[in-house]
Image (cartoon, rainbow, N blue to C red; front, side, top):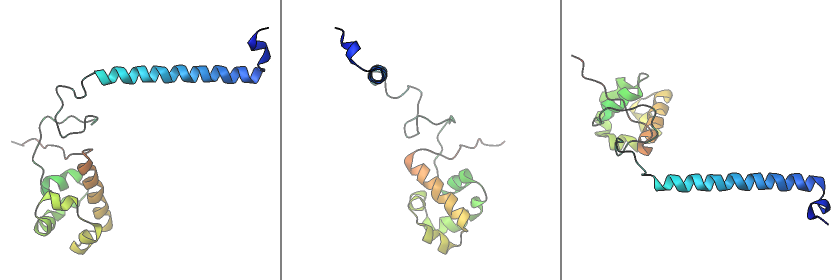
Length: 135
């Protein structure tokens, strides 16, 4: 007597789905093990930038507070003087809290933009675009 005759129909469908799932898991494991053997960074990538960035940067510019705020845009670049006099360098601005920015006199939306892009910058997910020199 065949074992399949003893198994009810719904159990067969579950076994079939389980087999499909296990096959797909095996395919993923093979795919991931193959990718581990490949070099982790392409030869043309720049260290320090996210490798999954959708925009290519042709060169890296030293980022200060003016470049950072110009990259954020949306009106926050008008506060360059205030922020440079208060923080001095970009690293201090990147760890600033919202209450400090509020005491300087920035509006809520400007604070949110600066903090959002500062977080992305710290994680390496965003960099201000390098502006070409206008002649």
